[in-house]
Image (cartoon, rainbow over all chains, first blue to last red; front, side, top):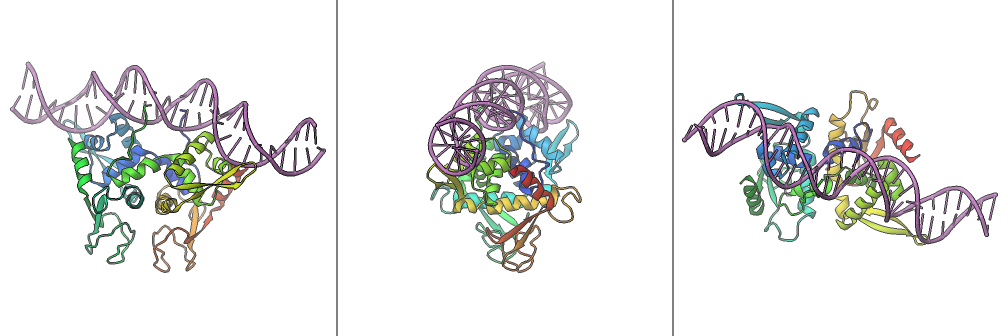
Length: 163
Length: 163
DNA sequence: TCTTGTCACTATGATTATCATAGTTACTAT
DNA sequence: ATAGTAACTATGATAATCATAGTGACAAGA
């Protein structure tokens, strides 16, 4: 295919976001970063992406200021990747994607009785379901406010990938 | 490249969403549908996508139950595309993308003085800024609650594309 | 009637991103 | 000396993408 279209100069904000987020690999890597995975091999294993794609996307995300590369050991040099403020602010997007999928992307009973991933509000303990505002205390939900508990099926899948 | 990886059977909800949304063309088409553009040529012109991609993605979105194809004229046969409930429920995702871009994806003053796209809450008239809950009345923002006004720059860009 | 125009697409060909797999570098540990 | 760990880079086959041109079915004007 020819070089993919450049959307970084459009004035439409959804277009600008799509330039970065309209890419499966980017979304999967961001998901992993939000889940606390910071290392190359860990991300590659869990996403199932090949190392050259992980490499290319991490480089892109660093360029875009969404993540930062930190040396966590000097010899031999080893690096990990952390979300910046700009990256953490993508929480709403990923959380909205999660909410939509929980509502529409599973067959009845596919994940057992509950959601694929259950979130509770740290502040008040309420199960937030798939809402953007806590049904318990009414607060808008933000990065860090939630505690996630994967369903048995999801837990098993992740364990299998971590090998 | 080999066939792109299939994420539709993962138990991770972000993965399932990424299967559909991790694609620039899909995001741009959805954006246009949310803006009220329903016709093939209109969408092709505004997104800048080639007709075969528009065609393929509209077919995919119909298959996924996100949009519906309606004949709006019999002879000659002409069709338009409308968001279903499942499609309209993607509003939060696109709106979160817009919010993030407004906060991070523009240079200082690039869009004039305000945002690239200004939204006001129909119910109370308040400018919602980039929040998920109306700063005027406190209500969570949902599909249909907002009135959008593009900046001069965005308006000009869209007019140029409509040609 | 002949030509032009509209609109929703389909067809073709060159280009390039993607995946799978294997290899590299630079160490540490046994 | 050999094996292991971790962060990558290199290679090659394949398929998705873009640009462009073309099609079919009709309407409207000259």
